[in-house]
Amino acid sequence: MKSKRLSESYCLGIESTADDFSVGISTFDGRIMANVISAYVPEEGGIHPREAARHHAEVASKVLEEAFMKSRIKPRDLSIIAFSQGPGLGPCLRTGATIARALSSYLNIPLVGVNHCIAHIEIGKLETNTKDPVTLYVSGGNTIVAAFDSGRYRVFGETLDIALGNCLDVFAREAGLRQKPGMPFGAVVEKLASKGTKLISLPYIVKGMDTSYSGLLTAAVNLLKKNVYRLEDLCYSLQETAFSMITEVTERALAHTEKKEVLLTGGVAANKRLQSMIKTVAEEHDARFCVVPSQFAIDNGAMIAWTGVLAYKHGIVTPIERSFVKLRWRLEEVEVPWIR
Ligand code: AMP
Ligand code: MG
Image (cartoon, helix red, strand yellow):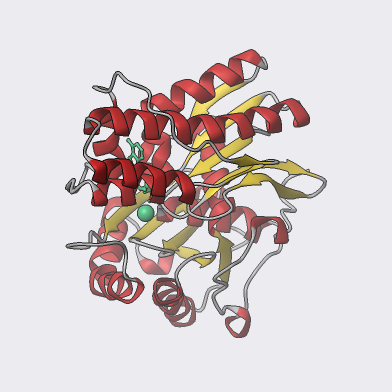
């Protein structure tokens, strides 16, 4: 293994924290060879953790096979296996971890447990060539403003209750909207919001550096049920209020840290209105604004593979007996020796 060139050493990463099961393969010098994602779309309602885990188990071998096919490498070419160890939904995490442990034991190669939130930041940096950004990570399960400081990533602000993506998803479901592959609820809300013209007053809740979306969601759903406003105007107002809240927090993190880059990632990063708000504050602080390309912004295996490489190259491995999943693993708990 030591004699191999970095470009010929491979890490396979497994992502399974929530609704997506994904396998990515990265070289040790950061070339992404494969990134295959299979999303679980519930027939109705939100994500049921056991149903999502069942989906992951069902698609795992097909997704693995496709990743090997795309990367044109064989299992025996792998040097390490990385997996998302947390945070996330227990049954989903355990399904991915079990597959990772099995591969690592069978191939007799090291296992590396990766923090899902840090992986989002690291793949974002790799794909946009940013070095030391303030990151806004907004997804179905997370809403975090983070930046590196004194040996670790630090959370500068976060949601106190539900995630921004979840707020949009629940509102869309309450409104009877339908999502389909390639058109998630957030994108459906975005499309309707683009036709909105009236800004309806909704609760704007920022406490210190943190946001709260559950009161905003309840207020928006209550107005929806009253049937007095156009759905387009409600979507528009929900977006404007929810996005302004997190933009305010991002701006303050930027002013405080004086970093010169802003990285927007997570599934909600696809939203053009959010992109334009964050871009505006970045420009006001002379910072470069970057959005992570969508296949690396949503939950994906490539980010786990690449972060596994960074950790492994700095001596981090996860013995099987310490590979239990960590449902509430916060990113500031993780040492990141690969950043100096
Ligand atoms: P993730 O949790 O990173 O897999 O991302 C999924 C979340 O991103 C869900 O809450 C989606 O509704 C949301 N999302 C996807 N596309 C958009 C969009 N265009 N605008 C807002 N949210 C979106
Ligand atoms: Mg997802």
